[in-house]
Length: 141
Image 1 (cartoon, rainbow, N blue to C red):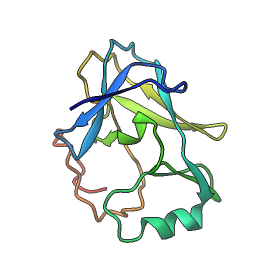
Image 2: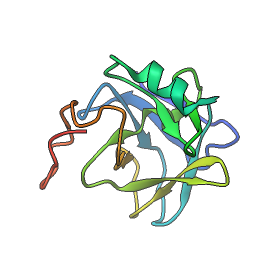
Image 3: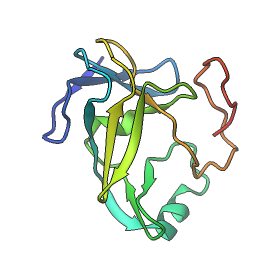
Image 4: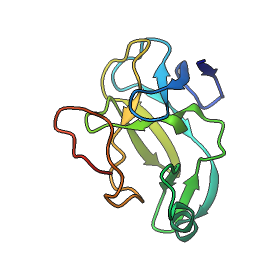
């Protein structure tokens, strides 16, 4: 069953449902032009040290470091963008701007497209297999 979301900081219609990549994913529910801001991610503000402590031994984490000292734990957030899966060939990007975590479309999206980003450096430190199955996949997160 798909769940539709429309919190105030979600700027395009999306739904969350099972993903072929991993667990749940977030999917476009409307056409989105390239470059459009999709929405933002909120969560509990914590220190980077606490984020790293929480990440130890977990295979599913929803942490974003904002700076060398601040992080956001989105594991209890109601934001649909927390379900954004990694891809080595993403169709969106995640950006930290002025302490906010925002998502932007890298290309035009059509309804049904799974929204993906390149996670970049992660707390998995190369120990978690990538499941994106894209050509040129790096193999590990």
